[in-house]
Image 1 (tube, rainbow, N blue to C red):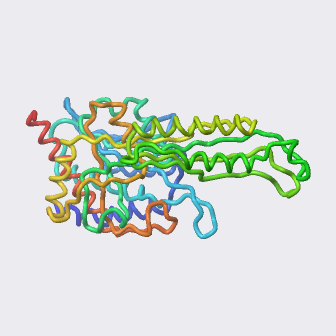
Image 2 (image 1 turned 90 degrees about the vertical axis):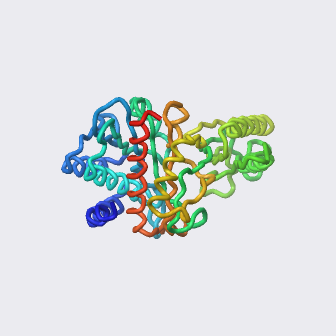
Image 3 (image 1 turned 90 degrees about the horizontal axis):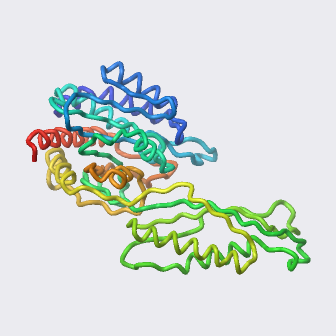
Length: 378
């Protein structure tokens, strides 16, 4: 397999370079979808696209059982050198490259010899909407085992190490608005100061405490109020909250408490506060058999000394909707150590690109081992 990887290395490098330099944000991955579609069709794969959404699915082979790979295809929108732009600072360009590379190697090895292989190029992971959209299309309904991959930062795992599971936490983004009454700076009693309301809300949110054994947090990440006139007390404002929890159970309690304190602050301040959950992901629920298979693939690829334990991280991933919504799907996600720094979502994020070949080999071995297990009926 090492020889095959070296044979496709120039192709893989070209694919990564194109994807890295053509980032597109969630639900606008039109060029990315078109590029992948043409690339995979030229390689002889059966590609399915969708009229109502970006993204695509490759299906190979026939048979009753199905092994799936999933990659995300969207980029972030962030400030880079003073300019806001689409930017692949979460590694999705590498994830796509790994998925395509795995397809190329498996084809050269003649897999799947039986059963089916389905590779999901999923849009809109960054806004937590892509997995749910693919679920609505029934794309994973026939999948027995599903595997994902995500580059991991140096804060979590060292270069050369790989983990057979990423225990992501649950996350929610809450957008809100405060609707009060503006007043003259000399007559504050005639209105409601949205800044003071927000100050109360910040303190109330910080006073929320749930199970201390489960990491969780709620914090204000955006607040805007007032205009250019400093003698006007602003009555209206908009804000965003970021909620995190390591388990789905605690996330439910956290959201309930946040909503309660918002109602209390609104009543106390005599204003209206409207909120909407605009994006969310669920905590990981991985399958132990899938983890064991991937651990074996990691050991064969990099050696047992570079097999890392499952990674517990507060970050979110919509990959885990697949198992939450379809419990029959056995899934886990490869955590790939790659000297990624300074960190995920940093505008200048970099990683060791040689790790792409390592990721390809691990996923190829994982697919083969899973097919063999399904063939044996275990």
